[in-house]
Image 1 (cartoon, rainbow, N blue to C red):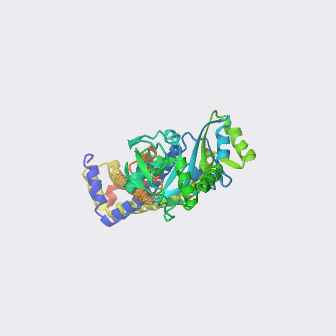
Image 2: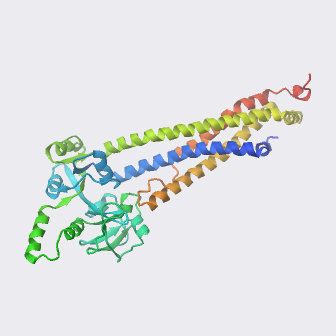
Image 3: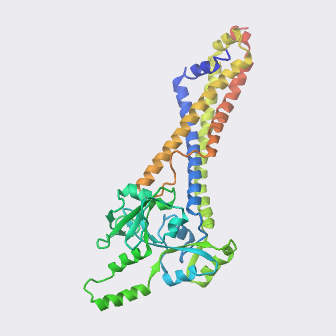
Length: 411
């Protein structure tokens, strides 16, 4: 009886296939929702931590600090404006600043942002080249892994950027870039960027404002005016010491026409906003689990009443009460095991769909299939808890059944 208990429980479970399938579906939906939330939250947290590595402050034009962080670190928003190159140099020379990395935005390649910067930006994330070399001169570019795969471009290829940070802008036909390298996938923001020298961005936009019919002297005069008005979009700052976190942002925000935003503070605020939405989804998943547990309870309670003859036969064959109760618990355990497996697979499937959808839209793939954070271990625990809790009363009823009453219902 002991050795055949799981097999007998399996047969009893599927003796009523429609009821079993419904209970399994309800449990799977609830567990898949919870597993996907765990998976998404873990990967989003890791993505934010990875992209924020080494960045103590973001400096840009006055506006929303959250917008500045989203635009400058994660490249998810439009920057609040440009800042004069002279002000950027003033920030870079501040005694509390150990490193200042300029970012110049304004164009895109098929939706992927073209970023003018220095090679320090590659070092910030420890990025290495899969093949090719970094840019050595203006109008040379290095592609992130996702850009290279999505665009089909490789080393030696030439492309032109489009004005704006989204698809559909005017194309700069007269100023093509040459691809000199492709980055290895780093799982960071660089995967979805086109990187070039800051001077490249200036050159492209200088050409937009230069009349080809101007004389040499007029072009020189115009070029001098443009050089005097050079701008960048955002600066990424690394402090010399942690003490700068208390005074440097206050200096920038009060003394200069710029603003400094602390990524850690803004990301914490962003995650708290996202957390409010996940609380609702978590509550819905909890409701599904409760409904599934009630459904399992009703099914097993009905099974006790319907299997009175079977229970009596098992008792006559020598099965003690605890074995009869264990039979119902084993049915619930089978449900929990199946629902856990299906729920985890469904969550990974949802993550794969989300990653493919975001990847096709040239957006950051924050959620991907294949990750197994330790918190997912709670999914089978929740499944077992819900199923076994639902089976508790029916199992107790089966344990207390009097075999003489079952065999002699009129006595």
